[in-house]
Amino acid sequence: MSRSCVITTEEPNWWLTPPAEASCEVGGTEKEPSGERANGWDRQPVALVRFADSAGLADWVASLLLRDRLLRPERPLGLATGRTMEPVYAALARQVNGLTPTERQELRMCWCSFNLDAYVGVDRADPRSFAAEMASRLTTPLGLDPERVHLPDGQAADPHAAAECYAAQLAATGGIGLQLLGLGLNGHVGFNEPPCEADAPCRCLELSPATRQQNAGAFGGDPEAVPQQAITLGLREILAAERLLLVVTGGAKAEVLARALREPPTPELPASWIQRHPRALVVADGAAAALLDADCNPPTAVRTASAVAGPGHAADPDLGARRGPDLRPTSWPTR
Ligand code: GLP
Image (tube, rainbow, N blue to C red; front, side, top):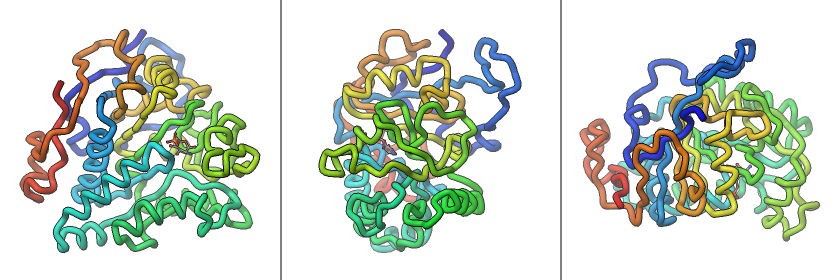
């Protein structure tokens, strides 16, 4: 098995340093698979940080998002919805509340985010829409200008054209800087349902029965009430981001997460394409990472965080110099 996963307790250097060039080339299916290369792509080690404590996980992920906005505002932040992200946005709101008025204003001025996806045919004002979810969990609590929080237009008369328009709008910014991702039970990221190639673009697609079942909770528990279509950024836009941050919680996702990180990348498991990204970081709780200890190669350090320590991130002098210790993300977990 090739090296597809590195369990670490340290924020990798590549996460902190600016990318030298576009992070990931999409397409390139002409080359024969060989060793670490398949379909013309390198498989990259994916760093995994495991938290025992879900509150600590949410706090730490939120601090990465905040740091991204304050230190790397040149490119937009890619955002995700779903139950996994609810505590992350709550933690982000708490952290932003702790900023000074000047810092909050700075954050609002530099904010620009693009969400991964939206249901087709659900009104923005409908509480079940991702737009409403972002408004209540992010835009309102952080006091953001809604114009700076972008989502695909799921209400457009022509959702296919709306998807193209969304892709063009994102491309005009230069593409995503940090892309936050959740994981579907069937291995989807965004709404990229299997099978999905690594160069699939932003598009309108049919949702699978599995995904409609997974997301039925917001629709009164009835999978039939979940929209049949959605607009999603494709793996093309996702893999073109400078950094990927996949957040996975809960034992129900342990198997799909292990497969996504260990098996050779395949269209049948869209999340597995993140192995081709040079700056992919996975943050998981103990339950979601339960199947990843045994044969990750090399198992450089397997640690479980019981809590996130206080402020202070020595590995990020840039942040320390610019923001002072109050804005530093929490330190890396220790056993
Ligand atoms: C949903 C969304 C994804 C989300 C994922 C996980 O269907 N389209 O963007 O990240 O599936 O959702 P959850 O966190 O609710 O398990």
